Structure formats: C-alpha cells, structure tokens
Image (cartoon, rainbow, N blue to C red; front, side, top):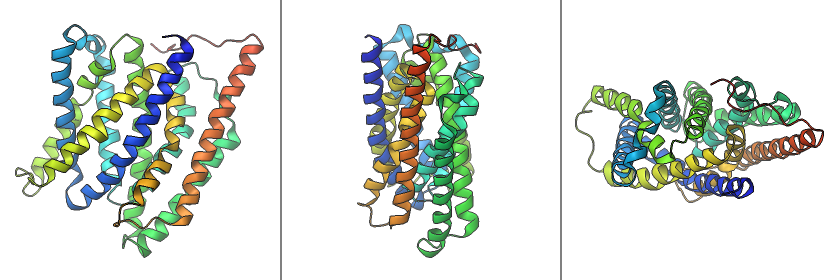
Length: 321
C-alpha cells in the first residue's frame, strides 16, 4: 500500500469510526441513565477484551505478544484507555451525547498542539491560532448552552453539568495520549488487533472492582446484557478496529481533527431518541466546532505543502523514543 492509498484508507477508517461511534454515544447515554456507568463499562470492555484475546489466539498467535515487547508503552496505554472510557461514560450522565462529543473532540485538537511536540516533530505553527481559538470559543459557548438547558430541559444542577464538562475535558486529554501510545506501538509493527488485545486490562480491572463495591454490584442486571453486548460489538469493537487502522495510517494530530466532525453524526442520531431534546443553538455551536476543526486541518495541510516546497521536510518522527 503506497503512501496516498494508505492515507485514503486511513480517512475511510476514521469516517467509519465516526459513524458507528455516534450511534454508540447516543445509545450509551440511554444506558447510563438506568444503569451505573461503571457496570456498563465493565460489561462492554470485558466483552471487547475476550473478543480480541480469542481472535488473536485463533488468527494471529505469532503477533499476539508483539506489543508486550514495549511493556512501558502498553502500561501507559492501559492507563490512558481506562481514563478516556471511564470519564466518557460518566459524562453522558450529565450531558447530551452530541454536546459531550463536541466538547471532547473540540478540546482535543487544542490540547494536541501542546502535547504532540513532546512525542513527535510536529511544528507548533501547523495549526493557525485563530482557528484553534475558534474551536475553544465554540466549545465554551456550547458549555454555556449546556448549563442553561441542563436546568431548563433535563432538571440538572449547575454542578452536575460542570462535572460533565470537566469529565469531557479529561476524556479529551486521555484520548490524546491513547492515540499517541497506540501510534508508538503501530510504528513498532504491532498489528492493530494485538494492540486491542492488550489495551483494556486496566479498564476491566478498575470497573470490575468499582462495580463490586456498588450496592448490589455483585448481581449485575440481566436485562442490561443484550443491549450492552450489542453496544460492545457495533459501538466499540468494530469502531475501535477501524480507528486503530486509521491511527496506523495517519498522524495522531490528524486523527483528532478528523474525529472532530463526529458530533454532527451524533446530533443526527439524537433526533431519533425521544428522550433527548436537542436545540437549534446547540446544533449551531456543534457545527461551528466542526467548521473550525476542519478549517484548521485544511490550513495545516496547506502549510505543510508550502514548507516542503521551500525545501524543508521536517525532522524524523518519534524523536522521543
């Protein structure tokens, strides 16, 4: 697969991830209203872990242990994976799925500008400051809309909405590092399936321990299982599989910006959920976040092409290894 074909394949994989992930976010928001987020997370990622363990054992025994050659990165990936998914399922208790997705994906490119140079040779000027400020301002506006609608529409307190917003920021932070560490393992020739088989140990362990401490936690609700298992397959296993291939083909900063359009998919899925009442103002804020994110990516690509034309091709990636 040549470079251009690999980039196109990566874009298709991230698009598939956006579509399936949007449906997952809306359905997850429904589930965590009736079940504890830790129980939902435990069932989902136990299923995901078992699936990829069996898949790797049956289909790719020789590559199964490839990520374990770098235990430090695998351990860090487990920490960031647990942090991103636990904060994600908790924030859905307090925010509309599309709002949560917009804040997460809007904040992520802004944080990525400061985090990515620590691991890769990303030029800080590759993203125009004005566009990043547009993402940040739109995210803040969406946060204020959530504060107002949380009280008027969903009977949530300001503290609950602020908690949801802070969890979204934490989720974005952990997601960035998850992408960086996944990219590290991919660059060491670790297959995406093998990475998936080893990245959820801590997530399952923490959510299991937490679920057991809940009142009646040792008796998980049977009625949760069909929906959660479907969510695990269509909302987590397949989308993450697509994302892992996208991460393998594209740089982390580009992944985070492309994912920024996912709130539009999520908002569209919300229209079919009678439990939710998405507003026109939140839709405008979400569209603004997507617009500024895509504009930032287009400007980055144009800037990179101008730099190469001037004879500067950048430093080798992964300088922090």
